Length: 215
Image (tube, rainbow, N blue to C red; front, side):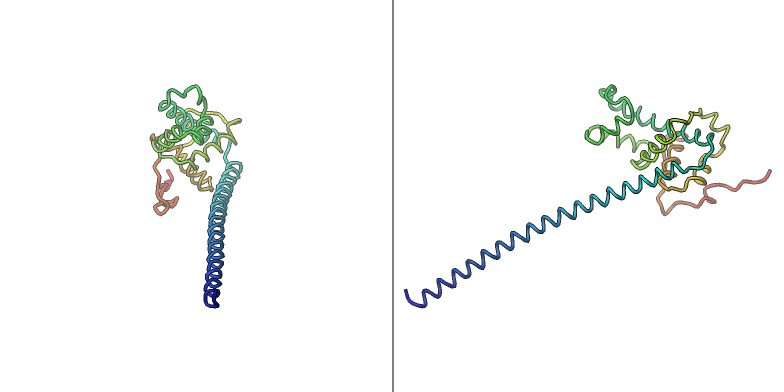
């Protein structure tokens, strides 16, 4: 074997080693990309979880810090419990075969997480009433915090005590998610469905509530 052939063989072997290294590097980079994507997804999921938890903590703080009288809390509780009953009843109407396995709204909320059919029905019921998950979260939080000591007032009693419950909620509830949930609960009971107003169309309190004239 002459010197030229030996050189060519050496070059081929060198190129093969280089190609092998490049392939190994390519595999490593792909693995790094996959790892990076996984970490990014985990971080995004963790961030969403933290944001959701923070929002839920804010609602709890707002619910526990409400400055209403016992009578006012009873009136709000009445709207809240009636809406929650409406949601549960409507789900059962759409899922008659699951009446026994879904005895409470809490059972519906648990089941819809894992059961696609129940989730589709649940979402359709929310849409019917003009509500979203965050509204239900706010209402359930209110119910858990005050349900053990609040009383239900019938519609005629509510009107006798409070002429404008919308004004009371808007004026007293500062947390936006809780305020929205309570206002929509009132709309569902009074009008049959909540009307969602885009953020940029929110009117000021003075625009929403007509001025009170002295008699």
